[in-house]
Length: 252
Image (cartoon, rainbow, N blue to C red):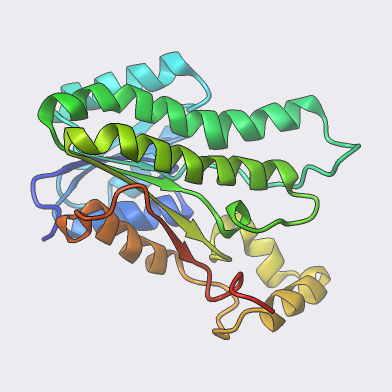
């Protein structure tokens, strides 16, 4: 029970990696605020399976007001926020020359600015209690280029540097901030690539350059790393990004 009596706010927790982290944290004793981007029903479906008095919320992390309101509500409901996990994010191609400005803005507003806005909202409370764990989700695409996904790569690289800079600022206040940079991880977001025959050539390419032989990690793999970074086992880690990509970026 490594998170006994802790309160964790997790964005993007209604599916995929966020849901797996919420599930693992609840098993370790945390009370979890399950945040979905738009569907309270989805958030409630996850919260209803968790122990520890989990509660469901909806928050569009693009909205500063919505983030502030959600953080205030979680504080009213639970009394404190000990852990913040920024798992909300989107992934889609942005080819140069054909990407609409709306697609550019949506990617930056959710992946990068949304991460910043939640940190900005919880930081005062964590500073006041002189304790906090913040976990951001970057990507292997934050450390290596992926053609036609330039904006995604930029947002994930930005999260790595944001994490490092904030560690310098927040560590003196008893706050650990770190990030995970997952590689290919099986989530609903990429189910089509993993299952549909038209993507077989791409899937074979991914498999050929994954040294471990596991083309896709599981969301539970990432939840295990999240637990390390958000528990006292990771207390020496500040500003780290943990690359968990099955060796995909290690070399040719």
